[in-house]
Length: 353
Image 1: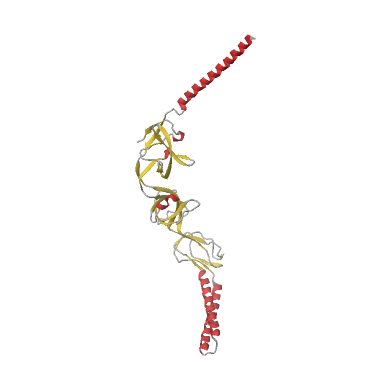
Image 2: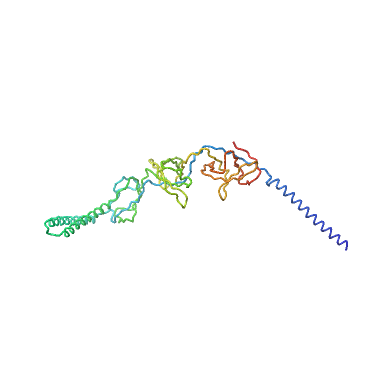
């Protein structure tokens, strides 16, 4: 019995010793791991010392190019097209007749209305003479005068209808492809062609609301278009009076000369809008910025440790970004390895000149 108890005691002591050994062993491994990969490891990073500078604040935006004037050419009256007086894709001048609708019936109606107008005018003249002789009442004279006025109005109406059969260009420009031929029965619903004035072009774009106070009429913008390296200029001439609630942006329109005809309506433009020049601006490399859920942050060096700082940013260029708040002159901003850094990580900063 004593031997059995002794065996149990030895087993218990052995198991306890094994557990204690494993605990000490795991602790030593964890300590070694922390020494290699944990918070106690010093990470070498690159950084820049923040300094103030003058910043040319240019806002990069996307815009659309539109014709200075554009209209759909249609007929106001229905009828048979008897003549077309423009060539597709050609330039036309203001007031030029583009096409003519047959007006034979309207001219017959005009002759009839003119005859009635003459008769009504004669009846009014006679009624006036009779009224002076008190041969008719004032009421009878007023009826004759009203008949004359009605006949005049009918004549004017028909003349206006006849004038509408000759469709003229409302402004000078280039006319597009036509959809009618001589002999076509045309109605006001049929689109004949489009007329555009491309000697000048409108560039429409929108800016975030925080820049709204910095945009003024007559400001000069620059823009480029796809497939060309040429830089064009335009002048801001109209600003929307209110910010769009849905997008929180302000719409702006500029106008550009297009004398060489190399710009086309409907294309996109990469716009650069100059804003106020900022003196004593704080600018950091774009690689220092870390996007987070509630904004943007950077890491600065704080007595050998990484410190997370939330920042408010503005204009961004290819290599740098303007900081509105969160940093001050003299801060050392970390520019490498920022995605893997955490607060209070030990760091060694190599400052870039």
